[in-house]
Amino acid sequence: MTRLLLTLLTAALVALAAAAPAAAQSVRIKDLVEFDGMRGNDLVGYGLVVGLNGTGDGLRNAPFTEEIMANILERLGVNVSGEQFRPKNVAAVLVTATLPPFARAGSQIDITVSAIGDAKSLLGGTLVMTPLNAADGEIYAVAQGTIIAGGVSAEGEGASVTQGVPTSGSIPGGARIEREIDFDFGGLQTLRLALRTPDFTTAGRIESAINAETGARVALMLDAGTVEIDIAAMRMRSAAHAIGRIENIPVEPERRARVVVDQRSGTIVMGADVRISRVAVAQGNLTLRIEEAPVAVQPNPFAPGETVVVPRTNAEIEEDPGTQLAEIASGTSLSEVVAGLNALGVNPRDMIDILKSIKAAGALHAEFEVR
Image (cartoon, rainbow, N blue to C red; front, side, top):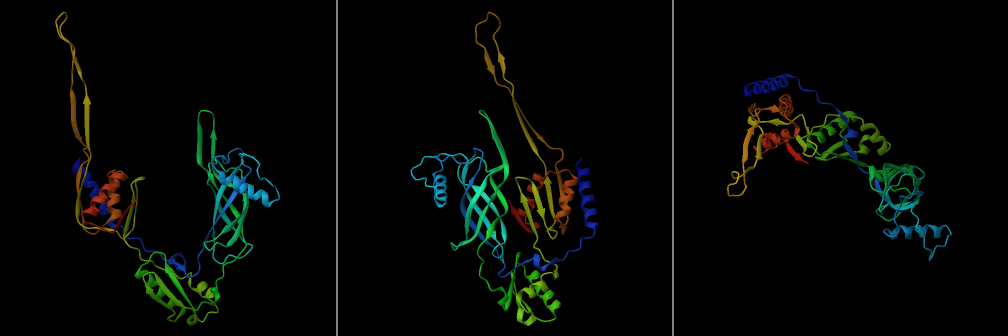
């Protein structure tokens, strides 16, 4: 059986090694970098959701809900000072959103609404007008609208059931921008490109591709994560025109060899450049079984004595007949090894343990990240 398994593993590795490597694909510059100045800004607000079907905050446990409700009613001309009201159809929420770059006053953005009290569900609720502030404390947008909840909850006297997250929802286009961020993008003389994954080879290829497209030395690699562009040397009318010309230039990115495994789900993600040195791998399972079968021993009839329980234990160790010792040739790619292990029926969790052992032995030449 062991010889058969080794034969199957060798055949799988040889077949995959003989296959032609896939050609690397080019990616647009706009998908590899972030342009300097083109960034979003986080917004947050504190508001009130009304119209809930008895699933709102318990005001005794969430006094801040009563406080904001009283403030809203007083702004609307309703005096509730000293009144005792305990409605169950309101909930205090935090509203979050991202102000996109170059957003103009009057445009709409999506928002997310999350309960902060003991509300059971925001399904069917309506967010009352809520100002959204940025980190500088200024109001940049105002949110309002009907919430689309992401789950459902139901309960009875003896049991309850919840699916999804009914205490959080979203409002597409639920906030209207009231204030713009001052940024003179058109006046930039130089523009920096920040690589999402810093790499000297990729940055050098971006520099070469831009210079080849423009026919001049307008791009300069500053480091592994930054390429600077001289907009004046491009003879473009503005930075926007310069970006429009270079953002769709194809570049072949260079990626570092990396293996990412998730032990909880048994997921393995690897790059095509991962290589393994010559190493031998043995994998198998041991099963320890212990059974207790006590026996009661009784004296003969009419004879003196007492009944005694005699312990009897049956202990045995079984080894999985699939245990094998396989040798992996030097330079074999990790995808070939994983494919060979899959052909032998090795489950993902055992495969993760094998890869961790290969990395510990110094034979796996890649970054190994465990989550």
